Length: 140
Image (cartoon, rainbow, N blue to C red; front, side):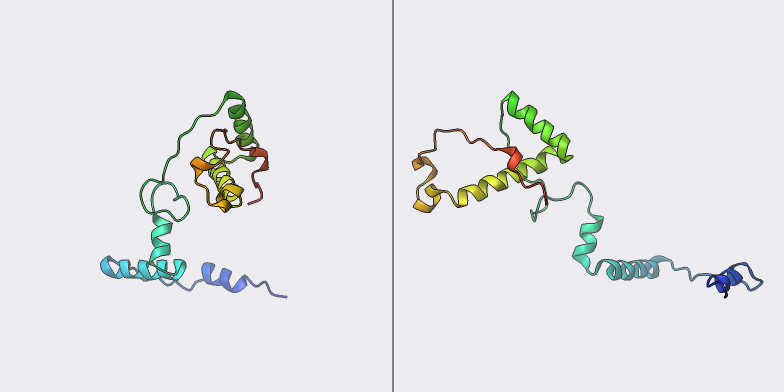
């Protein structure tokens, strides 16, 4: 049984000279590189996304900085949150986005929203919202 690599080994180590690859310069090289990128990525949008600098965008947001939300939490909640960050190995910002998503989903089905009340008319308007971070869906 012959080794499948023998023909390649003979070609690379034998007496026959290797053929030099075609060298392209200038606009020919640019056109060849563009063809390669289009073949690999499938289109201009995918190429732009692949070579884009900086942090990845949050969701389908427009170019530029994403919205920033600031808030304060108590020491106990902060320690529990930081334990969750360490346990899951996720950045704080990702966990906050998950918590906001859960809060939005919760309020989509809330009685106040279904009744057509504004937030000011809600009986819960004077109560703090407590997020149970242990219930965040970690299976994404």
